[in-house]
Image (tube, rainbow, N blue to C red; front, side, top):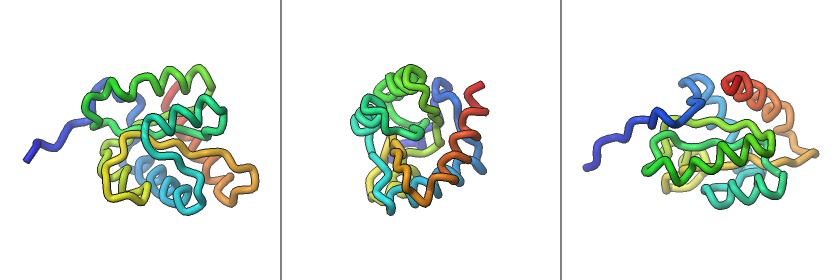
Length: 129
C-alpha cells in the first residue's frame, strides 16, 4: 500500500477544507449538467478554447509537474485555478471511480449553476491575490 500522498508545496493555492467541499460540490453538479471536463488534457483544451470558468487540480498528483502547465495557462487566459487536496476525492466528485488530477468547469451562459460558479470563482480569486 502506498503512503497517502501529501499535498505538494508547489500546489498553490490550496483550498481549505470548507472551500474544497464547496468546489467539489459544484464539480459534482457541473458533471450532472455536462459542464465538466476531466483530466489535464481536457482541462488544457477548455482553456485554449476559452470555455473554462475555473480549473481545479489535485495537490497530491504524482508527479505534480504534469499539472504545472495549467496554472501558467490559466494566468495567461485570466481563468482562476485552485488545488484541492485529493485526486481520489476529485475523481469521486467528477462522478468517476478513478482518481482525477485536473478538472475544468466549463461555461454555459444559460446554466442554472451560473451564480454558484461566480461565487466560487470569486473565492478562488481571493486566494490568488
